[in-house]
Length: 85
Image (cartoon, rainbow, N blue to C red; front, side, top):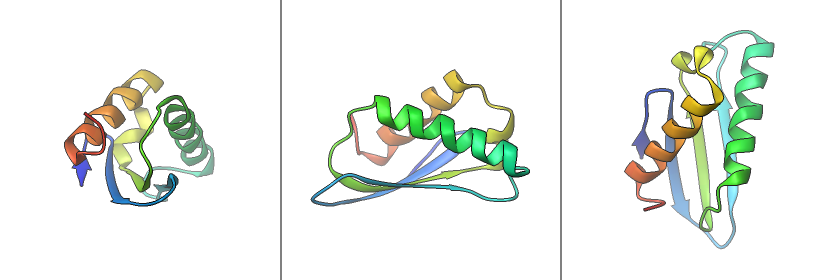
């Protein structure tokens, strides 16, 4: 498991890449939650990740994070978790 400032990442080896994104109501109302999910999906789409089942959980601090901050935080969390180098 890798944690960043705005999110945490858990993964298991798998024959295919599958991603789950969790943004709870603690983060904000639906508009805010959906914006964070859209940003995370776009970041994950741009990364070429190895095959794994991946779970990304956003924390309430992600509410005010810009796209670039989420990008760097996700990269940091993925490195801490050992999924990427």
